[in-house]
Every structure is written in structure tokens, then in C-alpha cells.
Image (cartoon, rainbow, N blue to C red):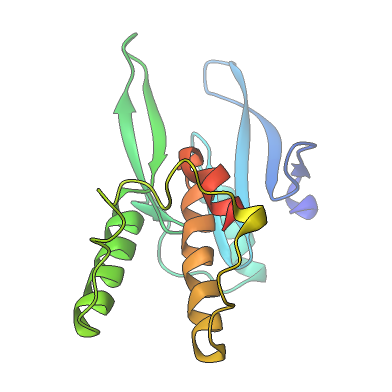
Length: 169
């Protein structure tokens, strides 16, 4: 990335920036979001840098507007002031995760109906620090970790409203 003239941001070393100019002379920053083997380039004309990057690394034929990045949906949205911006959301990721859990529960003839409305992972009176529930059996430890991973990634994709509950779990 540095060879292409980008530098990592202070806030996130996976977000790289490079000063650029539009045709009318307006200054802006190009962004490259790099996470393992996924790259999302945000620029007025991203082709040049992506082609240079493609000379060093094998890239899929996906130069152009994307509809997904790291499990999130990308979409163009018009704001109230009329500006058109790119947005990320986690609708498909969450819908797929919930459907996967429903299918798994159905297969095991189980449900979450004993958790009241199912809208809260545990009652507000729950105190995890004094929970004496037996530790999950060894065969289920990995599955529990997978489920927590799904929830943590959901938080990364924008569902910060479940952060406290997931952290307690």
C-alpha cells in the first residue's frame, strides 16, 4: 500500500488514505480498506490503483461497485440533503445467521420459547458474575464460541446495541 502512495490512518491501520484531486481541482482522500484478503477501494476513479495493486497480487474480477464487503451489504443511499453516499449494513448477514440458528434448533427439535419473547438474551435481573450454571459440555464449547463469533461480527458490522449483552456472554 505504501508503494502506491497510501498511508495507514491513525484510527485504524487497515484503512489506508491517499490525497487525490478531482478533475475540477477539488482535493479529497482516496481510501483503501484492507482486511486480510479483502480490499475495498473508495475513490472517484479507483481503476488505476486497483490495476497497480493487481500487478502485485491476484485480484478477482471485481473492479467496480460492490454489493458486499466482509459480510456486510454495501449500497448507495441518498441523504436528506440530497447527497449520495455509500453505506454498509448487516441485514443479510444477520438474516442468514438467524435462519441458520432457527434451522439448527428445528433439526434438534428445540426452541427459544422459554426465553420469554426472545427479544432479550436473558432477563434484566440476570447477574452473570454470580451465575453457577454448569459449564457447557465439551462437544458444545466450539459451537458456543462460533455463536459468540457470529454475534461479535454482528457488532462489528453495526449492531452495537447488543455489545453489552454479548460481552457478558
